[in-house]
Image (cartoon, rainbow, N blue to C red; front, side):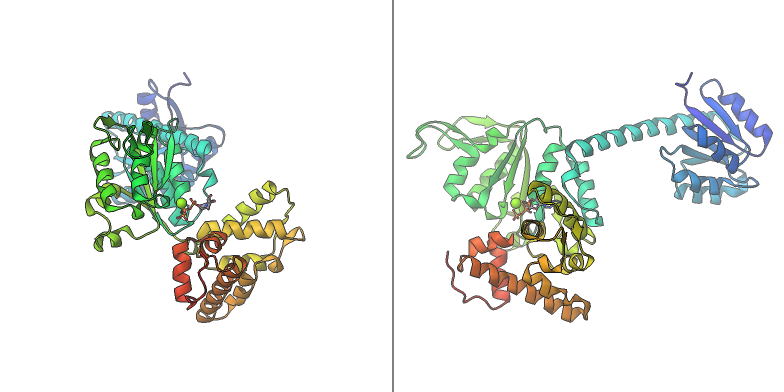
Length: 455
Ligand SMILES: Nc1ncnc2c1ncn2[C@@H]1O[C@H](COP(=O)(O)OP(=O)(O)OP(=O)(O)O)[C@@H](O)[C@H]1O
Ligand SMILES: [Mg+2]
């Protein structure tokens, strides 16, 4: 009998209440209350799947009851009963979260239909919630920190598109978490048990990249002593992650386009057509649209990749996330490094929050790791900050002063890194947690172009 859905009928008119109760008792477990206050009291100790409430009642009316129900977990479905003249209020109630309304006198057939529909939707909702919670806790965006609206939107997109095979293009500055998101897309997909195969497209010369991606037949070129499977084949049943796709050579772009269109290709030096079931996720820190406009990236491939677009905002634009990330990394990195760190002073946190983080999350992680490892006291203070960030805490002055302080800090960090690595730009960029390209841009910006390039 507990399997029957529970309905709470709230109405000050005894006749209406009892009439409805009688009609519904066969299929539902029915309870009654004479106003909103009584309904809430009953709900303290019972739960209802549906609350069927009159709108106008002495004491707490239907509208007030609605706002009290909204905060409850699980929230019952609220259906309002309203006299003819109150339709407007009922519509307003729906905007605020009521499920639907019925005009009085109640047409019982319509009520039954409405209840069936509401309960079916509620079951679906509950099921979705459960699956969502399961996914989140299993693969978590747990390891992706982000409370900012921008990141919440990213999570929502991941949830929406992970179950599909749609190609996803992830864009964002260096260090914003593109690879992390690519992995989350795989982990939250039905392919999670299959392979996740990353390819760093910028790391290989075009011909090498081609055989890396598509594999080659024996004797395809000098040195090809045996047949080799490419990454597309290795990713069969899983996800292929093409990182830094903006760097791919035009000839190879054509081949990738074909695989996306037909899910078929030939190995280098081969004639046999290979079919694969691969979900493609691509990432770039370049403005692909601009590359298309400049004729450096094929427009047709761009649109194939752009089916779902996920743009990761730079860290400096994610309000509140810097503080959360600092806390996250203080905890995890002090554990990893076997250091006891009790916390960080407000002043030091302010300086971290005010910094512009050109290397985004990667740079933040590196800074915190250095502070944790080198920190002396158990509480990190401004003194533990890298010199450049300490200089940056003049942020209290007007925006232009703050802006200048930040630029000075950035410039100083870059100069220090270059000195540490004797002018070796690639190493300096790695140390700073920014790409070589970003470093190059910054050097131009700061007029440091003439510093010796030790690469
Ligand atoms: N939201 C986040 N929460 C926690 N850690 C993050 C987050 N975003 C990025 N990271 C961490 O920052 C580092 C850089 O992330 P990732 O490698 O995914 O960046 P990327 O965008 O691929 O950078 P690049 O363009 O330089 O390849 C990694 O250590 C990653 O775990
Ligand atoms: Mg990356």
